[in-house]
Image (cartoon, rainbow, N blue to C red; front, side, top):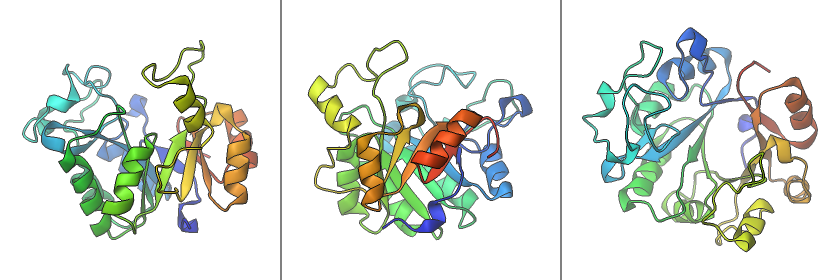
Length: 250
């Protein structure tokens, strides 16, 4: 059962605002969320050697002045990465993120996946750090295999499955490599790899669904992502238990 402390507005990648130089998934955005008492959602991707770092994309190009794959970054590279249109330098490791936030607000951490097995050190480090964290923390991913692995590595840490329509606005699939049948199962919350989740995070534009209604009936909370408008906020209030929001304050 997920602790009710998580059922509050959750700042998507921190309370970021690029116009104010507060970039997503950076300390400034996290401190801004903490100052308002919001829970924090962040992303973890795999750097060299399986090091978990707080970043969303698999390349540096969109957000930083550097280019190339994040997977090639070593720990010595991270402090030198400069973000575009800001004074922010450095991509935080998962350990640094946890040290910054401490127990002040709940943390909802999404583990990114390319649907292939990660470096063994990646999940082991995430599990170790999450278990040692003093405040409320939950882990989630689109990939049920990662959550099943973490059920063994960190059974005391709440786990969630992220899902949605699995379609872009133009009808193309999010992940073409996944079969139609597997996409159907993931979209309808039918796959858990033997490790039933404690909660779900579901795409706001796809709510409500029979699967999310059933989850809530079974006392599995549903977070709605990503809530950006008043219409989104109203839908989340009716069909979810907490919004993962950005671009405004709920």
